[in-house]
Length: 287
Image 1: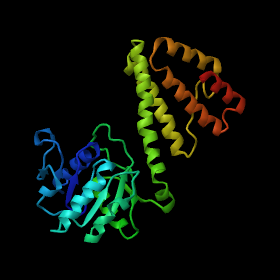
Image 2: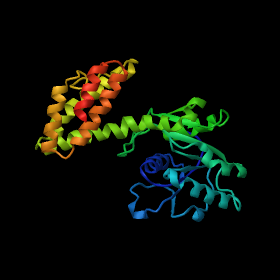
Image 3: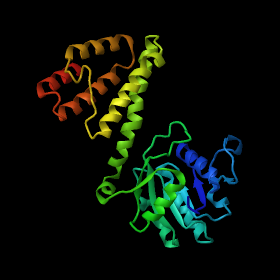
């Protein structure tokens, strides 16, 4: 653990998880949030402010945990304060899609700037949510040592992103979106269909979810392609057609099933697992 002290701007899902960890470490000095004190369900020796201008105590690090669209406003506020008094030595944001360059105006005040992105989903807080996770670090080689110290305070493993990734940072971010948000959307689709048929989602889905995850986890760990089975992988157009007809008659999610089928067929076709003829037949059914 470092000797850094922290101020956090924003108390959404990421900011909340980081604050919980830093409060446990006794490194959190203040939080800027629109939430009321009574809404904050963790304790520690830190102050709560509704604006950055209200902060009194300088910190080693300001972590900006707002949405990307608020970065410029937050930077301007920190610059305004820095023109009058010292507020921090280091500032970083958590975005996986936005470059650290958005923080560049802070450098004229001698503040080091970084972007440190935790490759994790924050739908629900868990005590071990940062354990062993990948952090993508957008910073100079010189400042990577600082990044490693910060990440050691929160939890996880620091990785310096190379120029190829930094040039394609939105694509890097899309990887996390795919394996968390898209994946969760597919699971929610299945849960809704269970409810539509008055089936218990926990009884029906949890065993198959567990096995599917274990299969994917094992494949990725071995550097193999994720195993995909079912009607689309078999190019079973008759089964796909029956699924669609029933969904149109008994569910409001037929279009979602159609889009998911097209998505999966496209991936399998590009991997050479279904041929051109089979792929085109699937697309005909979907039209």
